[in-house]
Amino acid sequence: MNIQKASELTNTSIDTIRYYEKIGLIPPIKRVHGIRHFDDHDIDWIKFSRHMRQAGLSIKALSHYLTLFQAGDQTIPKRIALLKEELQKLEQQEQNIQTAAEKLKFKINNYRSHMVQAEKSLRSFDTSAQRIH
Image 1 (tube, rainbow, N blue to C red):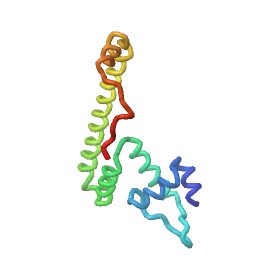
Image 2: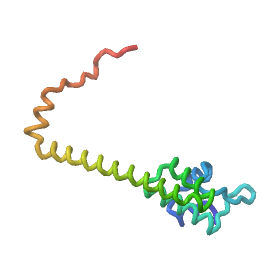
Image 3: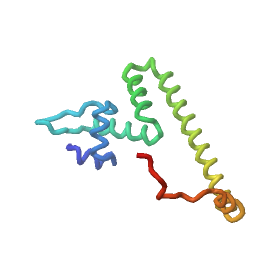
Image 4: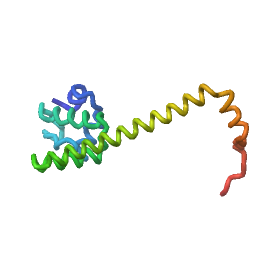
């Protein structure tokens, strides 16, 4: 199948598929007369990489994971450790987002008594201020 069909089957943009191939997140795609031809194995790789990205793995972490995967089953403990580390990062991000949301809710709920007072102490932006040349 061509890249358009692969894109539709995997719900992945054509540009992303090309990028994944370029940086090694999917194996090189077979080409006939310079045109990529995808098989079911290629589709599985695209889906796998996409799912891992959606699970929060960075490109760097996924690349490292795939290097470990290619090295064989003896790297399973390292792969599990990498996934645990990525989960911890996501959980920290989740906590940071929750903290930020709580602060924003406070500001909304106490706008007149809190935000208005805080804003009064701020100096207005002067967009016509001298610029350093």
